[in-house]
Length: 399
Image (cartoon, rainbow, N blue to C red; front, side):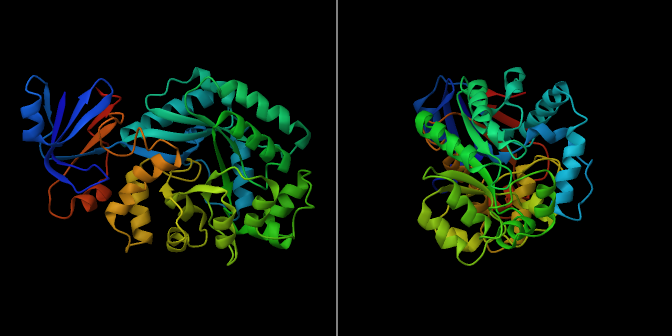
């Protein structure tokens, strides 16, 4: 099959006018000018997309599909601790069947907006066997032992049993304020043994900074109230705590919103960050401090985008995340922003040899976006607002 479009964006070279992608089975076999591919493959079926841009499917580097059903249920909180209380209250009302429906609804919505792979954190890995994912998924078990650290090993090992049969999976100790040092270390042992991914939330809120650095604030009081051992507080920043509790395994770090002057070099020198995920609209919802994008990029970190959950967002559109990022950082090129949901996210999830770009040998996960050429094609892609009308997943055109 040859898929032809007005322009093809490979994400690793210049746009190809009157371009095409040849697909055999689930793989891309050639990328180039349409007349050349047509001449070399005269017997192939041609799918002509007309005045559209053909590009890699989008990759959401951080999401919680468990909470798709919580859209609009939680009012903007006065504090991060209040939001935790609110989401816990809503979760108490949900059954396993509610979560299964929520995850399926989330997958359908993400796919509608052009996402062809998602890094999904679930607090219920035992439910994953009941999920029929329509797009590629890296499943992360989100792990919390704040109420009973003595069960850390049991929690980790059970999650491993529930996920290890899946092709792409990993572990997600939730955050230094909710996961014990032993839980982090146990996850790192598993990661080294099985060569899996690790991800964690870090330095998300001002209250987390106040808790660890100052030993005070609403989050400190909330966690103290539920019985957390607070002896690790008042001793340094969240980043310093993260460095103290684990080993040398790299993490896909999410948020990194609240950092001090010494945190950046500390993280760079530690080698413990694989990539960083920024969630622009969730960031705006909470009113976090400005994301230090330029400083992080200058230090060489691979930065990508995610949607976070619908407990702090409106939908699962990565196009909306790109626009929100562009509004916050207007000097960053649209081409670079698009890479943050394609090439960069593929690198973050160790999928750059199969996804994130259009080149021979990679999986044929493609989407097409209408273009007018009234501005640069990358600006048009970032500005796109709506469902994606055409997509291909694993070489199959998706309904």
